[in-house]
Length: 251
Image (cartoon, rainbow, N blue to C red):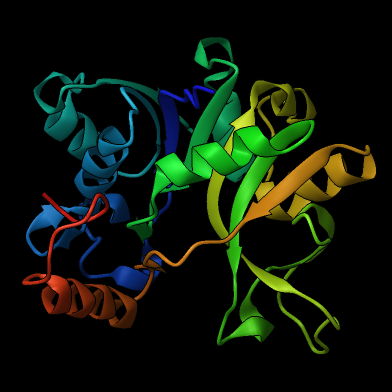
């Protein structure tokens, strides 16, 4: 079976307030990780796994992204943009590209550094029955401020528990913000309205009886939303720098 997914949406409209002064004049997806913008890391890593068309939503300092990446030609891919005058949220940002998206596509939060093996995630997605989507899930050391989900033995989503929590559910996994969506899911996203994936879209499609699954893996993933987390990502990359390169390692 061919596990063909060639498109990805990278959500890049965030303001990056917690990273200031680093983000005084650039979006947080342009913050350098070991000298290279985070968004470039995303693009190069996605390309390694067969993605050749990328869609990027813009809001804060959009020219910083567009002037650096252009059409994507120098990276060997095609990039298209959508500017949001008012931020539309994680799901609303995807709706911008509805007419251009194929049957299945990745959705990546731009402020997360990822070495996830997307080829394996594709394979897991296509092996699921009636899947309209899939999200990376896993264990967490900070469950009280994480979005949590209960899954069955096949990792099908059963119930979502949005953060914050005063009491933890009996069984849960952390939701880790790397997605594959089937285009069918877009019909559940309203146009020109602020709409979030984890807090609004996914609970709604579960109530509609749709099949949405989790995916677990051991590859490195971390958000860079604070200076401390940014430093931790850079420290990890320096640590693995001299190790044998893998499919997910930086080129």
